[in-house]
Image 1 (cartoon, rainbow, N blue to C red):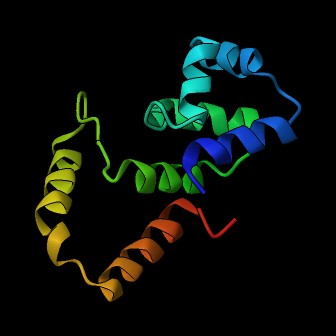
Image 2: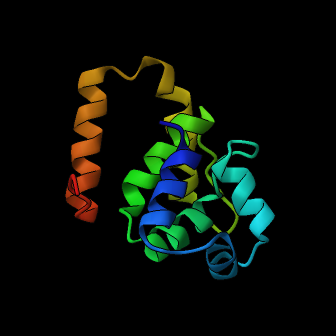
Length: 119
């Protein structure tokens, strides 16, 4: 299932119109419709968090779904501390050599640190 299809199903299950969701996100209903139909990439990270609340979805899982559909992740670094910039740069550098075992260990650490779990 594509990201937009997932969002459309969740929106419809929540009984919300395109206009309702667009108003919550501060965008046009055409924009939301385009995302749902796959004509635009998934929402930005900020909007992902907002739509997760509006639709009652797990923001962490929605973000993962969006990343899979985008085939990339963009990390906004403006205003970030030096340590956060180092972390982002390090992840980008080592990404090609991250093993499944290492990925699992990192995910477990993130889940533990931020209590994300498998909701």
